[in-house]
Image 1: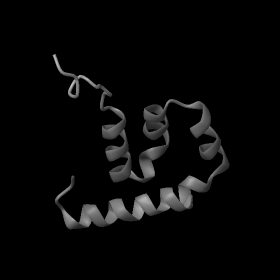
Image 2 (image 1 turned 135 degrees about the vertical axis):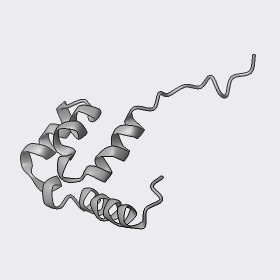
Image 3 (image 1 turned 90 degrees about the vertical axis):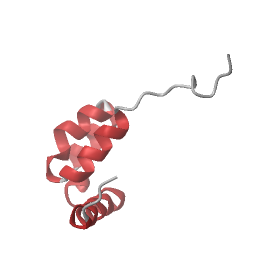
Image 4 (image 1 turned 60 degrees about the vertical axis):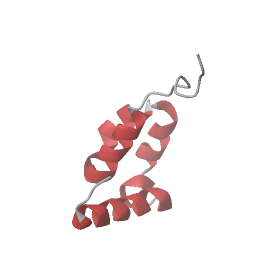
Length: 73
């Protein structure tokens, strides 16, 4: 996670915009695009106005899902 308090504050503000569907996240075109766009592509295309949140979202979406860490051999 980010250690700079100013970046943390911006990230929190951007997350609130996303959760409350306000600002950029209230635009009809962008809302509709969520349903038919690959998530990482959506963030790449529409996340420019929320760069800290975009960076975190793309990082999370880039993680691979695997149960191999839980499997016993």
